[in-house]
Each structure stands twice: as structure tokens, then as C-alpha cells.
Image (cartoon, rainbow, N blue to C red; front, side, top):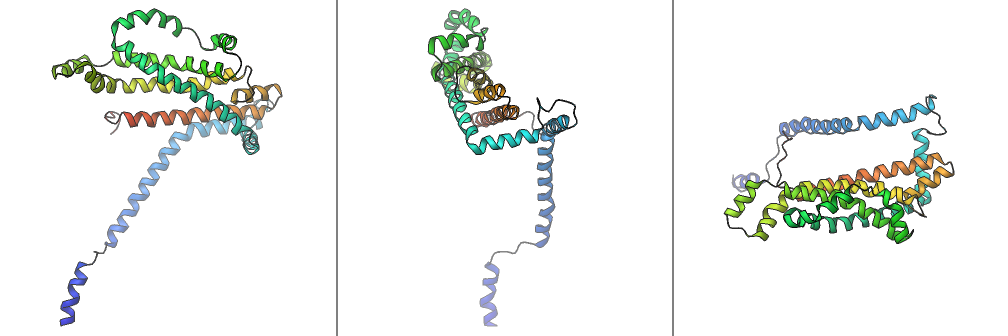
Length: 289
């Protein structure tokens, strides 16, 4: 009897056993979540898989000339050979260095300037005609000017990317500041906020989504414009790879460069989307639910 009395509290204070029914009931729920995630991934990949199937099948069935459009499998083999030899890494590194440098400089210059132009009306009226002139001038049309002034080196390519990326960031920043709800501004001023606090607490947070839209557009421009610039007077880069492969009739290598550019653009866009969510945690997703 004494042993039973002593041991009973020990058994009671031990960790409670999880009912087997609860464990069994959690298995279908976990499987359902995995199936739902797999279905979502498959749904988003249908178009890409269909394009891959068409690309693989059309040359093999003779619908297109496989000399000018090799099957996707042959392009992927060529891509792997470029990666294994180190050539692809060299070209990707050169292109990313130039594009990220130009994009970073555009962010550092265009966002503060856009905030000033959007906030101060006299400055906007002064610079508006000049902005209209340059915003309608294509960046690639100025490529010879950049080459003549800055030469064929890295400076001209980074400057061209900076020019191309500045406009979507600048114009979206201006639109974001001007598009802030006037009711929010009046409410903040009625609470006694000065100009600096008003700008910090109301204007800037409200303009962040529009600013990031411009940054995402600029991220795409930084790759596209750079590829065109690298086709002129470059010795490395994805644009150089595509141009060199075309002239040497290495068609599979040419498509490998194009696929790499598309993959880089997709990754950069997803990173910018994640960064936008990080700085816009206060927003409510109206599409959810």
C-alpha cells in the first residue's frame, strides 16, 4: 500500500500521453495540406511545362527547323556544359555586377529626388519640362552617346543601366507621394505633426508600394538594357555570350544565354517582391480570403 501511495504522484506528474486518435486524425490534415501545396505549385507551373513540351516537340516533329530552334533538351545540355566549364559563371558574374551597380545607384539617387519632387510643388514645376524630355528618350538610343563620352569600358554600361532604371523609380516615387490620400494628411496635421514627422509617418509609408513597383520595373530594365549594351564592345557578359554564339552559329549556346537571362530576371523580381512585403507589413491583402 505504501508503495502504491508513493508511486501514484509520480505517475500523475509525468507527461500526459498523446491520444492515438489525435495523432491519427492529424495525418489526413497534413496530407491534405501537402496535396494542396502540390496542386498550387502544379497549377502555377502548367504554362511553363506546356511551353517546355512545345519547345521539345516542335523541332523533333519537324514543325520548325531544329537548326534554328534546337529541342529544349539539347539547349539544357549546352547550358550544363557552359556551367561546368565555368564560362556561364563568368558571364553571369559580369552581367550581375554591372546591372546591380546601375540599379543600386538608381535607387540611391532616384528615390530621394522623387520624394523631393513629389513633396515640393515649386521643384516639381521647375523640373517637369526637363523630366518630360528625358523620360521619352529611349535608353538604347543614347547608347552611342554613353560610349562616345565614357568609352567602351564598364563605366558606360553601368551609366546606361543607371539611366534606364532611374525613370521608372523616379516617376513611380513621384506618383506615390502625390497619390497619398489628402484626408490622411489633414488628419496628421490636425494631430500636430510637423512637416518632418508628417513625411516620415504618413507620406513615406503610403508611397512605399508605388515606389517598389518602380523598383521592380527597374530591376527588369537593368537586365534588358544591359544585355543590349553588352553586345557592343564587351568581352564578357550574357549579352556578349548571346552575340558571340549567334555569330559562331552556336545556337544552343545562344538559347542557353537567353534562358539564363530569364531565370535571373525571375529571381530578381521575386527578391524584390519579398523585400516589398517586408517593408509593407502594415498593408492588408484584400485578395486574401
